[in-house]
Length: 319
Image (cartoon, rainbow, N blue to C red; front, top):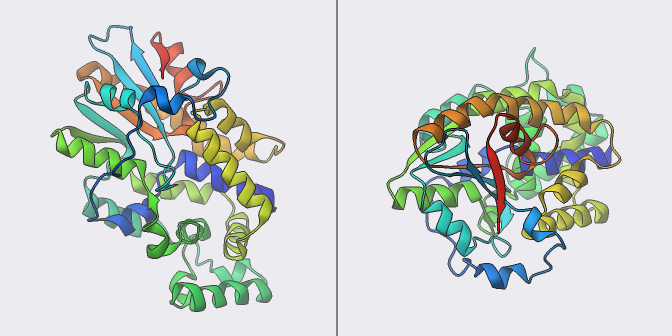
């Protein structure tokens, strides 16, 4: 169960916008200073052997598009010291006129109101129903001692949402973290770019209902325990793969040796990828667009890159 929890955590970081981070950082602006690296310098940092064939940034052309659009893979929450934005990323971003994210975070108030009605478990299920007395006491003590709030506030909240809050470290932890989505929004606002979304927060929250609450509750317990060396090593590996722009490596890390992940892959990645393609086509046909979604959505046979190619577009990595 522990590795499934870790793999699901990675899938959320690479595939689902961190709405808790958005809520906590609401109103905080300002891009990361000193984090725009020269493309040539950055390429030398533990670059993978096939760097030119793997990238976070992909150019979309052909199939009637008058100007290129760009597809970018984010990691929704990353340590501020690991955040980077290369010269070529900046250059291509500045050629676009619309920023498209998984959800339109610009309409913050409506988004948050939409989310609030979607985070509660259905049919009156509570956290106490899902955990043993020992597990519940462990979570209760953590919230009292570390979060400074009673667990009763979260007793009927979907456990995966609560796990996301814990994994992001609360407000103190968020001060040391950076959201690519928030940074891109700041850049877009400076250019007066339109900001659009591919789906709603309400839809993202509804996906949690497709993952058994029992599994979500076990994830919460593992998040509270924290400090697991294997989990820490896996997260470190994910960050290094991301910094190397190795999206195939990220995909393999999530899916490796865990057949149970196939069900979650369909819920959190594949179905959404397919839903996004017509919307991406519409945006790109109207104006040159910068589409930024979790890096977990890009690779794979049914990833956004291959789905766009299947529709007749030329999609090539930019490094």
